[in-house]
Image 1 (tube, rainbow, N blue to C red):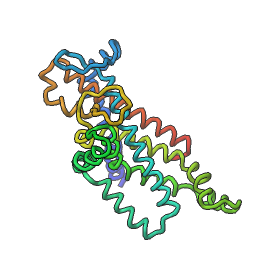
Image 2 (cartoon, one colour):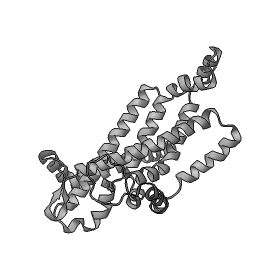
Image 3 (tube, one colour):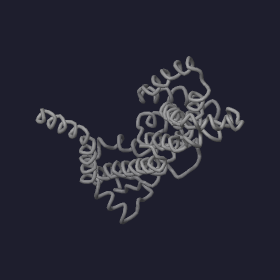
Image 4 (cartoon, rainbow, N blue to C red):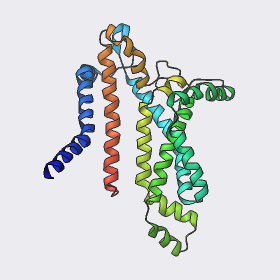
Length: 283
């Protein structure tokens, strides 16, 4: 019996530690393949020009564009998603909640390539009718925001539902209205979970490929706040140039270096989420 328990415990341990092993293997591969590019960027600067034929691999505009795309999409998704989560948790009746939740789950399960096609055909046409421009940051923000909105809605609802009911009862006992209780008691109490939801969706937005590929225009980005400018991101450049990476000196290393840099940024976001969760007492 003890032998069987030991075997089962060993199997469970291997399964639990497999994610760490996979992560370390991935980091090792990226460092071996792209560590030289990271070292070159640290020593000589990250550069402004991406021109593989001239062996220039400047990625500052790509870093900026990737962050700008993810931030804009996350803000767009948060405005709708957080308010929707508050409504579902505090105001919606059970029948409406049971109808909306499956819809959110279906929307979150839509393949990103399908949503990318939708954005490139429908949203670009709508934006063009209004502004005269088609592929741009704003199209990416809307399309990518639709993709990540179900996640932030569900996480916001879960965070609000986790607030102890005693907080609301105490607020009502002091004469506060339902809106005052939601605004001044419930939402501040769920603030850590809502912030974590924002950061999680921000990290996902940074790594998205297909939606951005179909809606951004795929041109070398420039440092600009203009929401109607065409752009590209680090994941798009990796997917675009990986096929020819081995034929151009230094390009393969630069692509893997960008992948390692992207993982580092997402890793920092996850560390922030971990410490904010611990500070809030979320296990």
